[in-house]
Amino acid sequence: MDVETSDGAPARILHPVSLTITEPVVAIIGANGSGKSTLLRLMAGLVQPTSGSVTFSPQAPRTGFVFANPQAQTVMPVVGEDIAFSLKQAGVPRAQRTQQAAEILAGVQLEHRLDSSVYELSSGERQKVALAGVLAAKPQLVLADEPTTLLDLRSAADFQARLLGLGVPLVVATHDLDFAAQAQRVLVFDHGQLVADDEPPAAISHYRRLALA
Image (cartoon, rainbow, N blue to C red):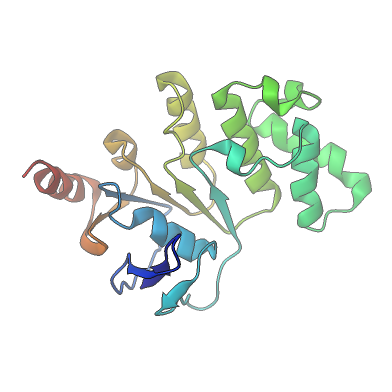
């Protein structure tokens, strides 16, 4: 698959790939530029291929996308308003939005931040608000692109646990091999090609050999 670059020229980012995902958690690992983020964005419809196509069987699921930087998806200045905005997009009536926003924030232990400015939050709190906004849309599949890159060790561990316990299928691109090891399946990409698709120990070993060769 080709994706249009910033200068308008098509670039081969991903070679053809067909995946059947049935596991609760699938991790994608690979070097920078290997194609893992592009795969997620194609799955979410955030970018369109200039050649090739993206198809789902039987139909495209309702997806939620968690970015590495929560500022990329936080659109309102107040936490509760941001969640309410996501609920509005999901078709929730105005009268129900404040209560549902509070309930969703309680699910990520941020109910006390309902009326806080998003600019007052720590990086970990911002990422949880971003996740809450995703969950407000009741996704059938969550895609996360290096979601703990900007977090400290404690915040990263907490956020990883939340992602692993979502209760909906998760596909996550990460450089954190300990995080990837907690998935049921790991995909390894290299120069746009899927080079390994296995259980975590075997796939991670393959990536280590590839990266350190």
